[in-house]
Length: 131
Ligand SMILES: [Zn+2]
Image 1 (cartoon, rainbow, N blue to C red):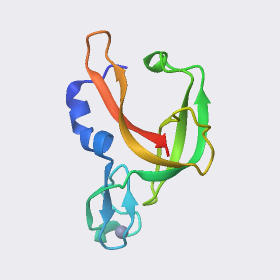
Image 2: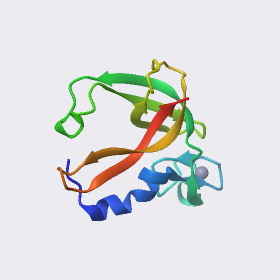
Image 3: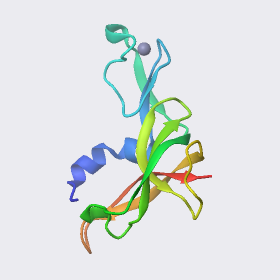
Image 4: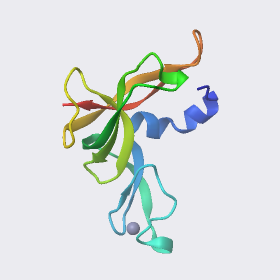
């Protein structure tokens, strides 16, 4: 998967720091950020909000037949994580040799995802590590 450096740069705050937004009117938290709060519509007062990075495994699947981008990582686990603040986020699960289970606690870590070829840009992204 090749990604233009400019688009990687634009997504950096979400991809590296788990920054979404929060509606100051109703308290709803969004990740990725939304332009309008789905509860408040035109009355939305959304502000940048950094998620804690804590959550739990809501569901998961083991990938044994990956795309070319992640062929060296297989088998690996992709999880749907319910964050402490509410939003559900999909991502790679770092199991550190433990069994991935529904309800297992995770924290967000920044890890290498893939590189654009042997000498290309190395892409980093959040992953969810079992704790
Ligand atoms: Zn709202």
